[in-house]
Length: 386
Image 1 (spheres, rainbow, N blue to C red):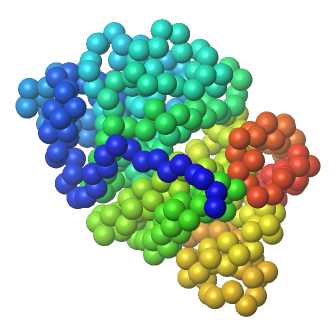
Image 2 (image 1 turned 30 degrees about the vertical axis):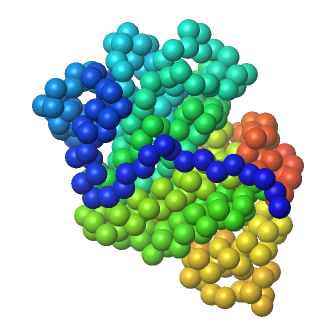
Image 3 (image 1 turned 90 degrees about the horizontal axis):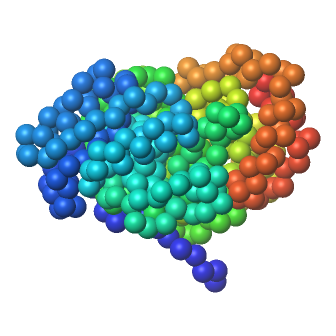
């Protein structure tokens, strides 16, 4: 058998009301002062102040950095890291969606690094020696609270780049589904399909193994049962709980098996046109799988079963078509964009996007199909018209 590693955060706490234990966990980590990293939306909604008050009333000194907005960038990361260093705190708390959590855990890991340039370029892998980090997700999507990955836009080059290191795993992940109740339908849909993309791509990844497939499969099964409830009835706590499981399970699959071509093609859309990551994944997924799915027929039978599309064990070639039809219909069901044209992407830009996507070799190599640049252009073309 093959040898493989399987990594998780040191500690995961999951459940309704789990956020109320943040103080005891901060104390367990020896925290007397903490940097609370979040975004402008949660600051405006009062969620940041509520968490700050909860910590301060127990005697912790809290400084807040909540200037984040949109997709995370290296510029935002550098500002946040400088803030954490200057305040000389002994703990970092990330509260928010994937953007806030990616920035919080990376800033915590880089706190003791004098010049992060080589780490941000990917020349060096981020090592040990950073601050303890606690992550609390407010969306059910990225799985950042359980992954070794952090994705950033490079505004200078107009591309997205991923940093990967075991030291980007948080010290503790606190997953409280109640924190996702106020998440609006559009964000719930985009982040939910992002989680599903993690599950689907990690399930067919060339690095997948029985342990990762177990998590990925369970995420897909719960997704199809509960995404509609979470999007269209956001106060349905049971749907929110189940989607928190989806995000967590899919995140574990992503962290240990990786994602593939859908993400590789989504990165240029985010880097050059600032298309939300989950939206880009959702839109590209059926067209990517229409091509790469031919190399993983057995897995497509399993995916169709997880999505309750029927038993295709006797007709495996038909499973792929059933899955891609489901993925296309999902865009309409969740009120997500159905074409690149709808997103304002110029058709003449598709060749440039393909040249950028073909360079995301780390993710393309995770896919059990070797896409050519010409094929990627064709995929973008189909996604353009919808």
